[in-house]
Figure 1 (spheres, one colour):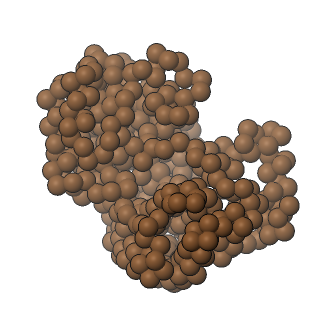
Figure 2 (cartoon, helix red, strand yellow; figure 1 turned 135 degrees about the vertical axis):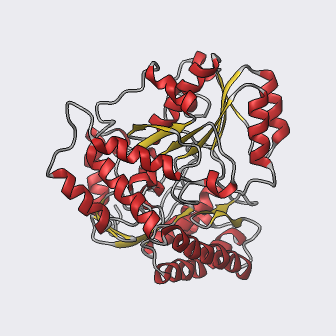
Length: 427
């Protein structure tokens, strides 16, 4: 048992008696955090930091899987939620907040003419695909990126256990920045929707997103941008605002309410009207605490330089990490990419070891130094210049360790745990 993470490991053993994997989310479980060198439970969060149940403080660059955009326990969001709590959470009839937040989304998201709410990003993407199929009368879907746990998508990945073969055969992945590959699939199948993250690891090539839209429409399909992460992060109106390409349907989640459970499907009025017949219905779809949080979050995003600040801090990370990769001579297995508000430290295979062994060693050293990341820099408004300094200082200390371990083909000697194994590749 680890001394540093003794309480976390004890509680994990307890949790696994009543919860498969001991966590509600794969990305918060032992599949992503190497046992023996990781915390598994946090007790609280404030601003850019969280504290685990062993009492250790961390600067958090995961930010609840990019759902926290303003920072943990944001005072404006908390005040709005506390005020709404006095009046109740969910009711027999709809609440005006449903319309008020829908109207806000229609104001800030270019594609939004009508809106429906869910609780998770998977709700939104599943709803988008259902109405696209209803609108087009077609079944096949083309995907690029990660789109949630529902059968229609996860069946196309290596994590398809329990998904009927019939469902798996209707979804087909396509590579990013490759228009010919998309065009080939659009000709091969009767496609209802092309759903994609408009950007994740790499930027779209010049004209790529416009090309995707043109090809999709020429084939009679609908274009869906999954902006679960990029929404309220790349720009107030998401990647579609940044890149000036408007899809037919948009899915939103995560940062929409600064970590409160809310997601949305929005898009063209004629397509969204399918939801008057298509069944997309949740008892908690109009839950008011999350809607109050969303109203406060969007208000703060409009009022304060949230995204500009995240971009500035994130640009420092991208530039600084690239400089340190060069300084320590690890460019043959490490690189950085992505948008400043959601960037990636990419670790690759190299002779004598593999990306997952290197990543495990990197995470081990990061967490020991009080930083949480599993390969991404998910910025929040609460991250300070000092937080960025601490991250880059950690990289300056850890990168030479990685190089020594790789050069000496001795990764296992540096590890205090078993290396991670791949969950499934989506980007």
